Image (cartoon, rainbow, N blue to C red):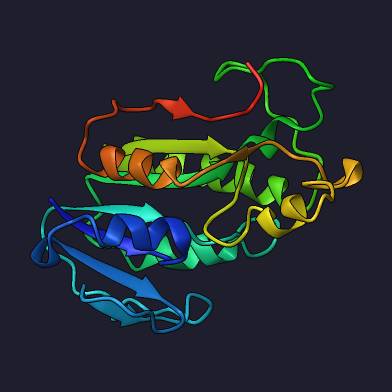
Length: 201
């Protein structure tokens, strides 16, 4: 199925370059070095003429939220006609709030406590409504902080310093997120499955 990668940062780009060139298109604010089709898009100034959509397609959406209701996602969804058959959304474990070290599952209630996690909950709700209204398969990946190449603090470790300071500590995942997103686009992860990775059990 043809796939639109909305946001080609670290994760989006990895997925973009794993899909056949004739079955994928990236959409990004800035140019990137890739041999895949890429459309330069200002996600904060979209209209319905931005995308030339096929009859059947999937979306991987990796863009950060804009405002408490995530107006960036709202504008993007308004451009999608017909609706996608599958929508993969990169959310965050931050939607659970401070759980004081407790293990959370997909059934745990959301309790967002900061300016970045609140719009993620709003986005998940907006996408849930889209899925109900259009019969679109929705996959939400709730992930912790992501560290890509050059962002792991290796130099700090080699110099004998702390990997991260205690007050900066967050759970993390590696490039596996790109592979996970790739498999969801291909339909290998079922409808409504919520996935997150943590260094804790």
